[in-house]
View 1 (cartoon, protein in one colour):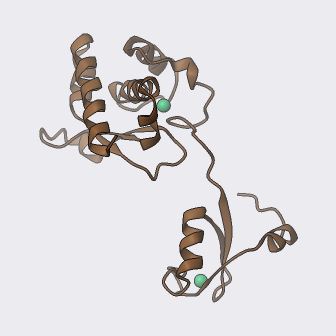
View 2: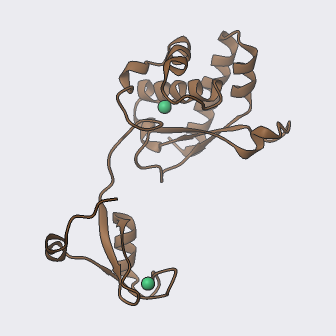
View 3: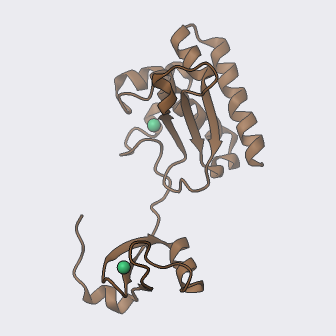
Length: 185
Ligand SMILES: [Zn+2]
Ligand SMILES: [Zn+2]
C-alpha cells in the first residue's frame, strides 16, 4: 500500500466515523484533521496532535494531525484500530491522554482501548529503537544516536559532523561502552 493509499483509507474511516456519531464537536474536529504517513515515527503506530492553527480556528487550515506508521498497512484490523484510537484523541482535542474520557470515546468509536492501555506514551509503543553512543572528537561531547544515523556517520564521516562545533564523530565500540559508566538521564 502506498502512503497515498493509506491516507485515503484513513480518510475514508474518519468519514465513515463522522457519519455514525452524533456529537457535533467530534464531527467538526475529525473533519479538520489531516492525515500524514510518517515512517520516522519508529516507536508508535499512530500519533495524534493538536496543531498551532487550532487556536485561530482558521477555516482552511487543519486543526489536528494524525500520523500513521506505515507498518499498520500490513493488517486491516490493526489499521482500523489505530485510526480509531487516534480519532478518539482528536475528538477530545488531544487532551487527557488515555484517561477515562478518551477510553469512553474510543469504545464509542469502536476502538479497543484495553489493547493498548498499558502503554506508557501517546500512541502505541511498537518497538524500542536501539541507540548508539557517540562522542565528538573535537569538543568531547557524548550523546546517543539511532542506528540509521550511526550508519550514515560511518559511511560519510566528513559529511555528518557535530552540528555545534563541526568536530568529527566517533561511534563508541562495544568495548568502550563496557568500560564507561552507565548513563542516567
Ligand atoms: Zn493514544
Ligand atoms: Zn563537538
